Amino acid sequence: MISESFFLLEYLEDAFPGQGTALKLGTPYGDWQVQVWGRFVGERAAPAVSTLGCHKYLVPALKEKRINSADQVLDRLNTQERKVAWAEAIEDSYSDEVIEESRRKAGLLVERIEKALETGDWLVENTFTAADIDAFAMANSLPKLVPDAANKDKAPRFMAWLERMRARPLGAEGPGRLEDRQARRSLHPRPRTRPLGVASLPFMGRADGAKRRTGGESVQSPPLAAGAACPSP
Image (cartoon, rainbow, N blue to C red; front, side, top):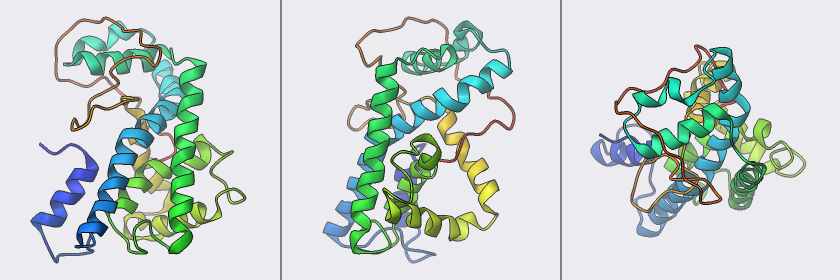
């Protein structure tokens, strides 16, 4: 099963060539640039955005559902890494250092997109690609998660790019529903560091190196608050 959105985009492009909007440039260097964006978003930006989104939106949603103890849901998870990630979110045990570092990394995504847009409207060679789709999934929430970095004064090209992305067909159902639908991606704890070549592994441990121990076996995910949504990443 392909679970990572970026790899799914690449698969769709290769499996159905010439159908719909091209998602890659079709040149060695151009496609390498797209993959560099995918790696940066997946390994650096996504974990940071997830941490900020969970801290700001998931924690209150879980408390509203009266899910205050990790023991209530962790026995439904099937991997130690995912248990650790969800336990931290449920207990809201993110340290100030972790939150600050996540803000810094989220700000790096804003800066990188702002820099890339100096030469055109899209991230790679002024051409709409999978890099734009993948980055938008994380970047769309940043004006609310890191407003000091993601604003029209500090990052005007970034903000204009967000508007262009929202205006594309994926946003035809309306900005509100688009944000609501994509928002749920931030409600799932992610790793803050991801081993190379491993997709979708949850957070491997705390930033300070401390580990948490939990038990239980299952493939079922923990419940989310119905309708709960953070600004879409």
